[in-house]
Length: 460
Image (cartoon, rainbow, N blue to C red):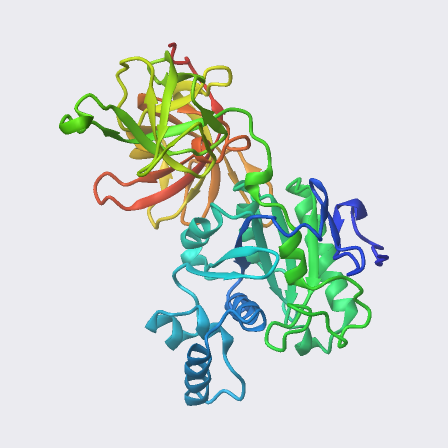
């Protein structure tokens, strides 16, 4: 497929929809063959400013992929008519809260599930208002692909840039620009090209390896599930075909197996009187019977004696499985400990450096005391210092900043009351992320992505 890429800062970073005859999309990890019908589950999160059409897009995907029951559609049509709309308001399919429907906005994260013959999807409809940025972070934290919607009439806004920065910081593998409401600008190619080039230049500064771009109209359905004749200048695929061929995060290799312990199972009765197992979810890698592992933070080494689920025993457990591990030795293991493969163990430390997104009206500042929840362990933490604050518009770092305000992002150093086994977020999402909690209220006030450790390391 040929596409006009003039004025693009780096044309090689542009991922355009491939022709339907080839069924392939060139992405940041190579070529993905469209004929592969077993691509696994894809988690998709929408992002962008308010009124850019995120909820409408998800409604259109659900409607055109036949994922809506007839009575649901009838209810939405009736509500749309009662509101005086001359069209079916597809945003009502995801905006379920009364306050959302009254204001015509998204407040909470709404999850919708649907499937095509080629793939299963979980769609996270996240809010666009700045005051609900924390909800956007929640929805995008587990996403494999982020859809950044932009209103063709308004172009990139501060919130569009903020959400793109957050998707980049959250290491979402695929970022896709969706220029929506093309019908309101007369399907003008120059409008799409201008927004596309501006977005590519912005993401280049974020070192996003590849970006896909699509001109659509979610309200009308142009280029969403099927390509549209309204934009003859666009020769790429539909947005849905791009979603069907994108790789999920589970397909990207990570070095090291990770198993945070959630619960110790010790019945001490009946036939299981001597049973001792450690329940949790495999966050990375594959564990197998006989494997040498290390329990952290203690550093004790042992082997896996068995892997159990409710009704069976297994030889191995893979990423995403919830299982119970039995160890070959009597080891002191409790909730919050981490079982990892001995060859690629994470670092154990009491001091970390992280990129933090602050999510409350109060400020984050030096010497502030907080609670830090990392996997299944919660420890006390104190802010050791603020390295720099990031301007989401210019991407400049203010090294003189002394605090972070609501929705601001910065590099923060933290000291912990107890050692944690951590990875860099770039290599392991689960063990490289944490949330910050106000010890007085119990409210979540920040989310962090670990970039490294500092100071004196904790020795095991």
